[in-house]
Image (tube, rainbow, N blue to C red):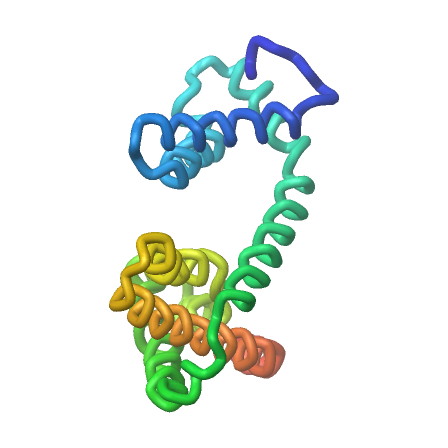
Length: 199
């Protein structure tokens, strides 16, 4: 990318590289998503990888041109994933696990997520109020929902009933967690923000 200057084709080049990484992962029998993710990590940390300052500046300009497209593409991908998940879920499962799913969702939202955020965001760089807001208002769903559908998909693909049953429970529980998380997070976002801003 640093040698080929295709100003008008920035988005096409990034998409091509991402897709090429995905296909490479598929061909060498490893996780195609992992290879694509590593490609993204290289993109995002180009300053550590490319030591040439001119090339670094060119690459930074290159990435800045496609940031708005990335945001739109991310939204579209999220919508697509949630539509597919919604279409694959059997509503009758919710009746059996609804109460357990709600309890698990509350444990994840108020205990597991803040602990996980604590491991990622050191308190020396963030105040306790900022940490609390991030842990209660952080990302809540696209990646877990995509991963949660995997056992069900594999069960249907290989016709294994035990995997289908477990996959339906995992997916339903994940959806309950996401719905409660998004609903509660939307309700308390403004009050929580105002409360934490007070001295």
